[in-house]
Amino acid sequence: MLNLHNHTTYSDGRFSPRDIVEAAIRAGLSAVGISDHYRTKRVRSLLPSGIDEYVEHVRRLAIHYKNRIRVLVGVEIDASAERTEDIAYLPAAQLNKMDFLLFENVQDDEAGGLGLWELFDMRKELEPPVGLAHNDIARNFAEIDHSVLIPVLETSDLFLELCPSPRHGKLQRPLYRHSAEFFARLKNTKVGLSLGTDTHDSLDDVGNVDDAYAFVQEHGLEKNLIDRRFGI
Image 1: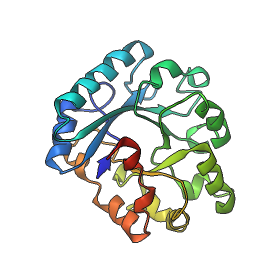
Image 2 (image 1 turned 60 degrees about the vertical axis):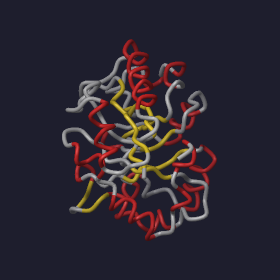
Image 3 (image 1 turned 120 degrees about the horizontal axis):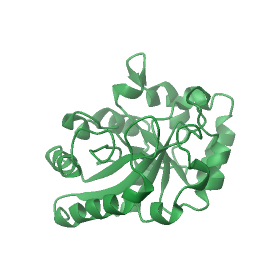
């Protein structure tokens, strides 16, 4: 299994990238992603000047641990023009050196996030797989019919993260379980799914993907998992 969403001391996480990788190995994961915050005013985060060092650090870990686990590097971008001041002109050349990119708060009016359609324009310049992190589909996309939303996600090649963390739950349930009907309709579509725990301050969170994977199995969505994009 894969957990793409883990923060480190490069942003607001408590642990180093090496700590995260070793926790993933102990948990029996096949792959782990390092995805620190990019340039948001909300929390400590990566600036463009630090991206190259960050990527090189994680790449060195990937080489060191290549016989034990696949290590991937990405960032999490806050889709808010107020908090991410360069959201309209992201450093695509640097971001395109990464394995994946996560965008949080997309289509989330309460969080001041950009609309999905605005992300489409940005997506054209971004080469790695792009995903929506811990998105409250039931709330943020309530006014878009599933028969419209699903083909749009397929065409734009956007994947969706299943995040089991209590940080992003409602009524003590993960957000994806509040949108079960929508996710069930993704079977036999090209919409990709990832697992991510949004790890910050507990190494136990790195391997805590069981509920998300159980949800995938409940709805027959194993073929939607994006693992194969990374050769996993």
